[in-house]
Length: 135
Image 1 (cartoon, one colour):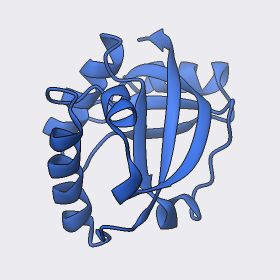
Image 2 (tube, helix red, strand yellow):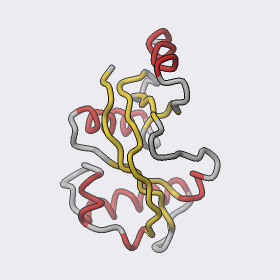
Image 3 (tube, helix red, strand yellow):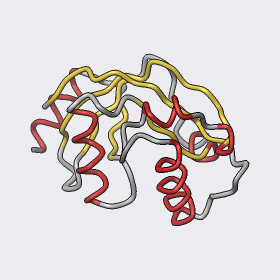
Image 4 (cartoon, helix red, strand yellow):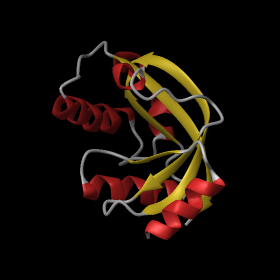
């Protein structure tokens, strides 16, 4: 798989390489949603984006839970939104669970609590992306 990653990095030289979530199982689950076209967005704490800024048009090589590349996505839009202001429509774009706002709130609160960043009014960077290539 190292050769696959190297080939992708040559094709997308500025791409960031990362996996979704905070566990191998979550990385596998969320990457599968992207590949099936169900997940078209993601979000993270605004503070984390200061360390690795992302711009619209950026390519991202997505890894599974074994750190193997599975697809490439392209960031199409970014917006800052408070956790408490996330709408049903935004939650649905993430494609997780039953796509409801209630599911989104519960799962993301748990994630941000594990990360140590959760607050009801925390600022998030909400990223919409498109699937470019499945590996």
